[in-house]
Length: 88
Image (tube, rainbow, N blue to C red; front, side, top):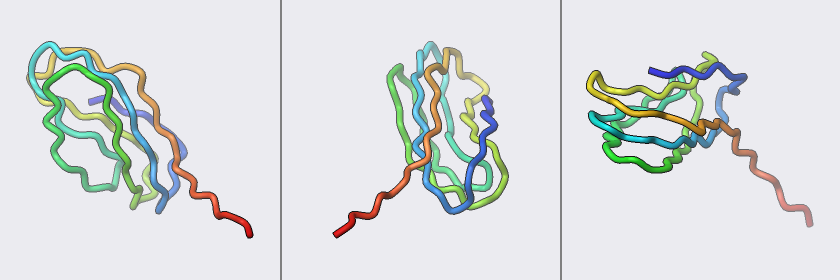
């Protein structure tokens, strides 16, 4: 799989976005270490984006492919989602 080291903050939400050029097989999962992830089963080319909550202090984001995945994963970004409070 592909691993991106970053300064992730426990309890924060992040948008993980990437592009897939799919040739064969399945791209299984996207997760931030310490977070349960669901099976994605990506089996076609396209742009993908997921919001993930960090529940651990481990500082790694991962995109995991199955043994049969053939293709490219590009344009990867991990951005923290910050809620802004409206002031009266």
